Length: 152
Image (cartoon, rainbow, N blue to C red; front, side):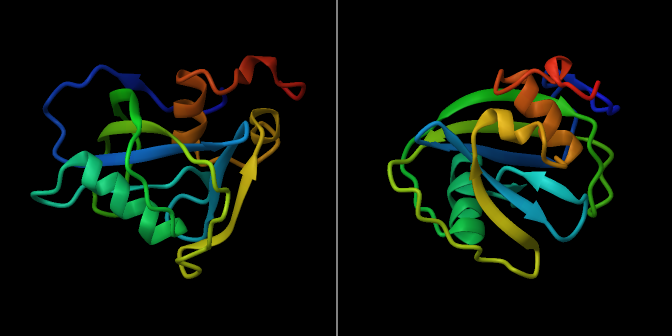
């Protein structure tokens, strides 16, 4: 895969918790091009705030980043992942949900944090410069297989 991202079972020892949403519509996946932090295309995601449930965090992050209001999704990954962050954590406990929407209307809500937003079919994701943790997550949940890339 070309990165040093390691996905492990949840240990319960990591204090920094993150959530992510693989949002799908008409066979495409919603991605944001990050302007800050670790650069690259990523699914909507963020840190869980103190006292916040992971589901409330996913709802908040999607609204803040894309303007999408969601009501249901299914958890596709719970894991410890060794991705560092600006808060000083070396790894995060991740919870990633898959969410289907019928309306592809999105808005780049945080242009100071993201330089682009768009819908991509899984094959197109392989050509994007993905944020490493999202390359690992999307491969783990079966969205694509890096080993089938032509450039590897």
